[in-house]
Length: 264
Length: 314
Ligand SMILES: Cc1cc2nc3c(=O)[nH]c(=O)nc-3n(C[C@H](O)[C@H](O)[C@H](O)COP(=O)(O)OP(=O)(O)OC[C@H]3O[C@@H](n4cnc5c(N)ncnc54)[C@H](O)[C@@H]3O)c2cc1C
Image (cartoon, rainbow over all chains, first blue to last red; front, side, top):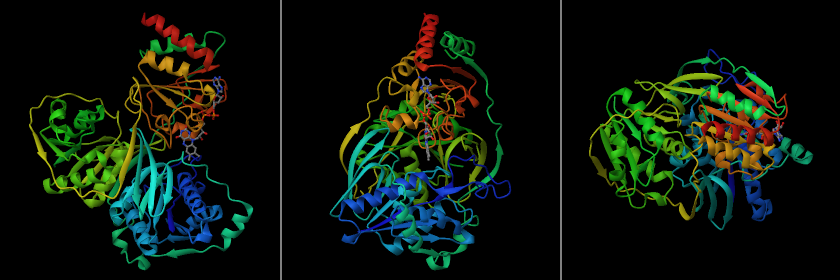
């Protein structure tokens, strides 16, 4: 079984993010870049599925797929050090400013190229937070989709999940190939071991350009964008208000504050 | 301009967000409300949709629609939008709404903007990003402007209309996904988290005991939220998580109890109108964003506040 995991390099979620005034895009230079936390759950799921089905000896492989600047190889190394086998990065200056439609177009091309049985994704990236790529891939590739998985099981050519949403928990299944997105409650991503980190240095990251994928520059990036930012403005940070220390009447003070604000 | 609103409903009962989206859509002139459901849902929902000034109601009905996830809904919706020459589609920014929107965007080769908090008459969307630290205005430049709008973004304004429901039953091609079992979430009596005007949340500081949080929530008619520490521990379901990887809420009042206020939590509640926190640690970062903070033990402060409010309410 061939598993592909779509991953993204994002600004560290612990950092204050900003937009760049001239490009109107996220300023990626000023903050640490990491593997999207939510994609780590997808990588971990892939590794667990391989382990539960006979391991690498049984011929199962995990390939990471990403689109981003050259620097995104750092995030891919993280996934490789967790245990993925190899990676494909689509990197091209013409991709700068790509929106979700363009990203899904590129990822779909790579998926068609490597033809996996199972495609795993995180539910969203912590920077753009759109949560649309898995569904877009499903449409572009005309493959079934199992989303918001809190549990994934693979047996023979069937994948079954427990879909966890506000509406409740649904058990669903689909034959492979299928696109599965996982939620953060599904597992506890492993920390790369020293051995894993060393091994990752030798693993292959294939870098592809738009030409390699047969996509024209006009279709993607800022040039082909399906949506554009008109303008943006920074909001004043919230300032701290009143702080009282509870010495026996903190609750009463709180109730008085709410009464005064006509909130309770 | 031809503005369409995707009406969110449960068995023909429309959600509060549906009214909000119709209110926003009316700014652009004529509005077509589209509902996708099982036969009869359109008729059941008509009166409620007509109370928000729709100019046309179209129901896409299929008896098997609920047995399939978003793919089938998107099929029916995309074909209808293309056929009717829609220029804008507003969809609720829920997990399911975003899935449908993403699919419709690909099917119609259209741009998509998610998590808008407002939309102008000419379809410029306002988004509040990075936990409210920046406000962005964007526009779709190709195809239909597909915009997902967060619940609670505007006050729904009623406006009577009297249109009939046009029912269409296109032939939809099922996907290979099968649903074998459903366990609907227990709703309880509390309002839905993203729709609520007051949210009381508990974190690791509750130590798993949400009783004082729930008592205050019930007195105020509030929804209950939780930090990731609390949902990871299994004290509250993931669907109640507020923050970066949970819900974004923007209520009139947010009360954080035993929550430190990590940047990922603040990303989901920082745009609340009034923020109150109770935390033992005077240095907790949550106090940087609170209008009123109580440094103290939530197990003492919350019950006292609850009984004082109850006493005042009489
Ligand atoms: C990618 C990513 C996404 C994340 N997404 C989210 C998210 O969506 N939502 C989210 O909440 N977190 C999220 N987190 C986690 C976040 O970083 C914090 O770990 C989490 O918010 C901590 O929860 P907490 O405040 O309940 O716990 P803690 O940080 O442990 O804080 C507990 C607080 O309770 C106080 N306390 C203890 N006992 C009492 C008492 N008796 N009375 C009063 N106060 C008391 C303590 O002083 C402390 O401040 C995310 C992290 C990452 C990396």
